[in-house]
Length: 147
Picture 1: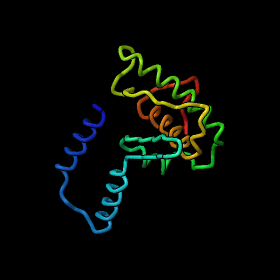
Picture 2: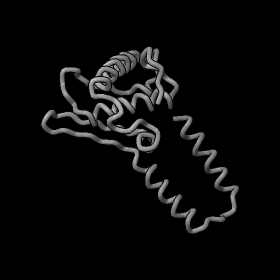
Picture 3: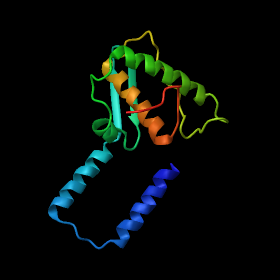
Picture 4: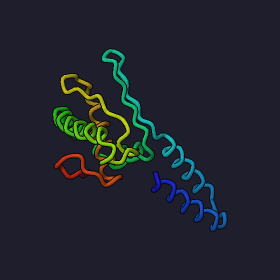
């Protein structure tokens, strides 16, 4: 959170020091970037299985669309196995608030390996864990997070 506030302060300072020299194309590009950045909520729901995945993380949606491996790159079995490992470690860290930052690990994730959540949920959950580890310099398992 401090990183976000600091970034906003630096951006605000840089913006106030510049003279307005925007052209029409720069303005359209800037509006497009703001529209993409404002769409930071990813939601996946399935009423039949009664589950819902909501990821609210600034920058995750842009990262998912631009940097993450495309859908279909990993098999569903691979994603399910990694997600189970990540969720297990995540939930252990949630239960240890004096040892791990409660701003990072706020809620437990109810992920059951016996339920078939489908490819889309597993893909986005896996990529969130990769994004989280890279962005906050955390390592949830013995696997080094990489893209």
